[in-house]
Amino acid sequence: MSLWPFSCFGFFFCCTQLISAANITANATTGIFLQKEISVSEFFPRASNQSGVKFIASKLGSPDLPPWLRLEQREVTDRAFIYGTPGRDVSSQVVLEITAWNKGDYSTERRGMVISVDTGKEIPRYQAEFLIKNSSIDDFLEGQKSVGFVEKVKKVWQPTGGVKVTAVESKLNRDGRVPIPPQKEGVYISVGGESTYQVLQIDYQGCAGLGQQANRQFPPYDIDWCKFRLMDKGQISTAVSNDTKPAYSGEGFDQSTYVAPVYDSSARDFGYDFLLILILPLVIILIIAVILAVIISQLSHHDSILRATFRLRQVSHQNGDTPHGSSSSQLGQPKESSTPYKQISPPEQDREPEPPMGAPPPYRLPPQPAMNVASPNGGSQYYPGSAQGD
Image 1 (cartoon, rainbow, N blue to C red):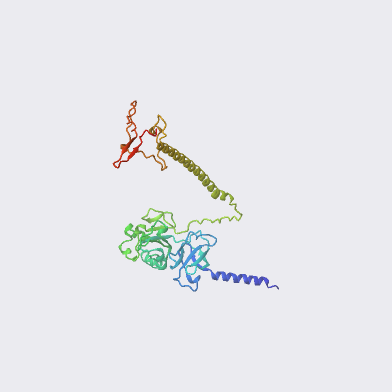
Image 2 (cartoon, rainbow, N blue to C red):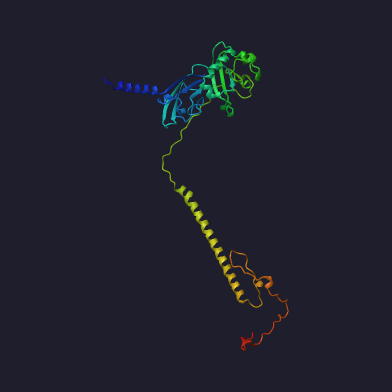
């Protein structure tokens, strides 16, 4: 008889045991609050709980946790908790994937977490919801305050059966705002049981609470009685509530399906992107540069012509080559330009007054004749006349 089938079965059984031993397990019940702490030692045996380890959790094969579960860890040195309340539509087994990231050496470890949900029990019908203003969700989970709060509710509720915590939720997940330290954001906690809450319903006095005798049972919890709510899961409407907002049942919302994106491994042609992103802008820049160069060349040529024209006029004026019947005023002065050659006109007092129109030319003295001048020593000096060279 061959032992091959038995050996294969034994190998498969051993692998299953090893995988189940490596996973983190937790048990939950439909409609009852679940709280599970994630220990650092389960991922890094040599690390302490004060080591900087960041936890990331998601459902196996999905990018996020189921809608009814949440992961709470504010700082890498804080304790991490998985908490939530399973609803009626939750499967009997939920597999999570938890990744631990060590901030000290940047090493990572991954473990699976299997939550077994008992779906055979019903959600507690009668529930009471409280808003504790002087607490936060992380303090509430770390200090196990839900157990002490349930004991205080029992004294006031006086149920015939037991009561359990059905939901714990931060106020920030509903309509709260981040408070200014050292204030707390507040925590919603729901307590439910199978016996009626007739005592709570009779003693409830709106924002004043449950009466002076009952209010003494709840310190140090600061309860916002205006948000107090009594809910009957057997009915749609809320029995007693001082709030106009709809009641939250504590059950999970409808889970949406996750469709993974399709990976396309075909080669992509970047030629069109290269032409559009690189070549086209360069061509536009070159065209603009050529246009600007032509404009600057034309302006420089025009300015050089103005300089040459003005220089010729200035030289002609200095040599007295002004045409007859024209004057410098008739030739016109060039407009202001960048040329440094500007005509310097003589001062007003050095100019000869121009004769009026139709007047004869001004009288000038005739040229002096040549003469000999005798000197005291008996010599003589000859001075030619002004008209001698004419």
